[in-house]
Image (cartoon, rainbow, N blue to C red; front, side):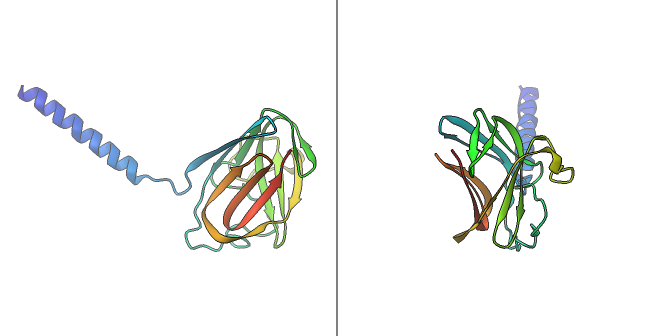
Length: 169
């Protein structure tokens, strides 16, 4: 009986330690998924969600005029099971990485054919399937964490003081 009691005690302590270590390992930019339907197309966006953490984002952490991975860690990806019309331009069904080139008054959103890539370090413009330019909207309330929202006719990337909207059909 004593042996069983000791075994149970050791098992409990092991589980408690593992749980505590896992809880302390919160990722700075946790993986997130946004899903929705746009005109019958199933759309899924996989991204990592960084926090502002009192940093200057647009023009600083995310420099103007440079390709950014539109999230953290691995490049953000978008998957659609049907063709989409984004800002009046066709994006064929498939999986793409998403990049953004922010400017002071506009953002170029890029859908690249190479879906699996780390960050933007190996981004190749020759692999772009689609590029669209949009005007960011200023937010009244800042978004601490980067988030993607999908509605019936829009995809919006929100972070810090910006919403980057894409009209989708």
